[in-house]
Image (tube, rainbow, N blue to C red; front, side):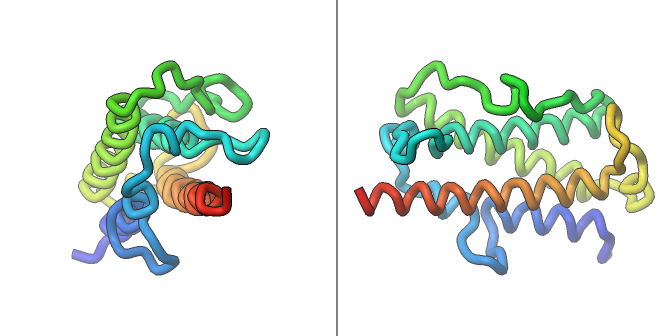
Length: 158
């Protein structure tokens, strides 16, 4: 069964834990990153790795909720877009990563169960369809994966 929904779910999994065409998945990029490294701000006025992980997760959660009929909130430019970190412990860092990967898999599982016709349905609270949303989530996640890779390089340059 080669449906578009299955292909999108595959691309999402590749971005997070699979074998993406472009290079390392987010799981490999985060492997070995400590809470101290994740919360460090090596580049002024640039989000740190931990903030990027939480930001990616916010969008994954919104997509999952939109599939359940919850209107997608306006995020850009709000505090919800880049939530403040309250606890920089190793346990909290591990939980943030776990939550992001869990939500990525939850979204992939939900997408692969969709009939392709649902991809043309309008996302609650938006003027675009689920096809656009899901591809956007993959693109958004990979964009920020690139940021994580660059921030890791800043550690080795310091």
